[in-house]
Length: 291
Image 1 (cartoon, rainbow, N blue to C red):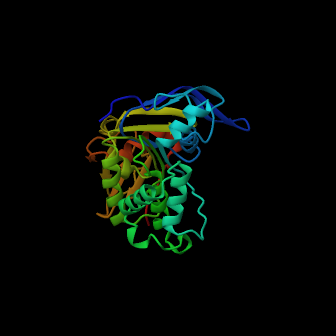
Image 2 (image 1 turned 90 degrees about the horizontal axis):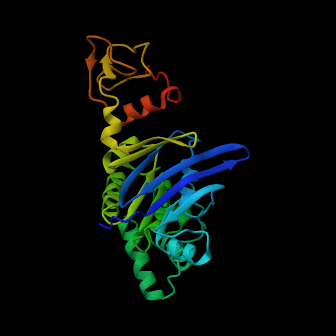
Image 3 (image 1 turned 180 degrees about the vertical axis):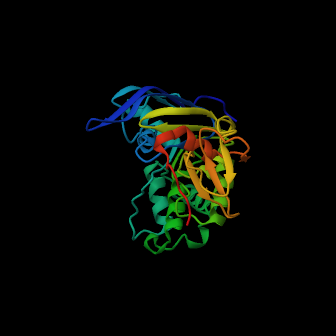
């Protein structure tokens, strides 16, 4: 695996009409898969759009794949080596899967038709869409459209892969398949996975970044974040009024997450979701008790 730094951000700031989306963010990424968590409005999509060279920051420095994207020549080189799946992707709905991914390959300057078509077939096969490649996008399910978007991001085996909610609308079987695909991508590329699905981060990532209100609250190992919730998760027959969050599990007991487990309570091992809720504090749901 290439160990070179793929992303270097120093003091990156972005505002929208007086609202600070990113507040002096420092970040570096190397090959491997990094998870990006945060509530709605945390700045995750803004961060990915800056890394994808769609947006420019108002302040700070950005280096991607060893280059500063300010000038035209390095920007073009970065974009050739970058794959990006936005949170919401617009599709020409009259296009077939193959035609759309082929169009995106043309935009990436794959000019020779034969190798380009071979690459389009390769990425559609990677996301299990080879059998519907001739089908129009408007006839696809939401999960299939999401996989078309992922296919175009995978064109050319990019060195930097930026994914905004890649598993939204994907069924459990396909989610497992995509995890295998992304795990393989992380063996050679730098992958940043933005998601609300803590289970995807726990399954795929060694490192997790938690962003809130434009600032990084945590940047470190997934296990390190989970460890912060040790002794703060417990099971009980009823919701604990002192818990930060509480919900009824399939066993009939309530899982409580809070500042500390009461004396004599039935403690249980924390998950990444538990630690994430505790880290966000008052930004997390207070109680979620099932009927």
